[in-house]
Length: 160
Image (cartoon, rainbow, N blue to C red):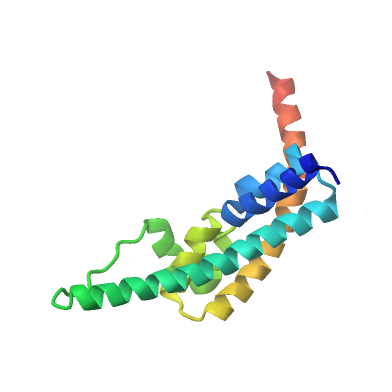
């Protein structure tokens, strides 16, 4: 294993931890051209590490924020944090399952994990559901970017 390959693995791992569906997996499949097992292993490990890291960071940040607000602004009533229409619709319609399902695809790993920890406080449950969602989306994205995406792009090039 040379340094170039090691740097590709590190970049794919880190990008999977932040932006999984539109960053880490396409980079592993289309740019680095990793074989199936290597691509699935690296991208899943990166996304799971990101979910665990951001779940712990989110819990810590939300706890510190609550302590800060109660210490320095005890007289202010707690204002509702506005949430986007998409997040509200997902949370009200599907709950934690919907948030976790759409996190690797639509939301990014940090944002989806922060929202999940904010709305549903069971961190271990969130991480375990997130792992299942990440693995399922990883298989889907691998096959999409490896087989379907090249067919569509070649078809579009022939149309022009």
